Image (cartoon, rainbow, N blue to C red; front, side, top):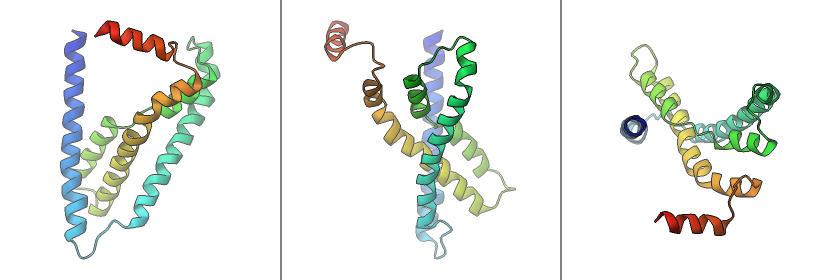
Length: 160
């Protein structure tokens, strides 16, 4: 049963990202390039990058603030685990589905729809490109991996 629900979740996330890519391609790329008066400027992309960095700081401060409470509740996290949790938290499918809900609303201005879609998809893209590819390096740097590289290779060779 666990595998079935895991597959359904994977398929739903994949569908959300495919729909988001198609809508982003149509709304931002095609509309902005073909329009003589584009609503999104280069400064908006700078805002996406700065928002991405600010999200990391906010996540770290939130986890750090509630860290003593979580330790008392039984979630014994060390400081390196706090750093990893604040860095590795991916922001993807849920945010993209909420942005798609905003885009389909008829009560919201087109400019606001474009900006929300840009910020949410930009953050998800940066998270996937940067965080997802470097989390393993951070785990090794913080010493959170219980296995050495030799043990990992042995386990992988036995599993195959």
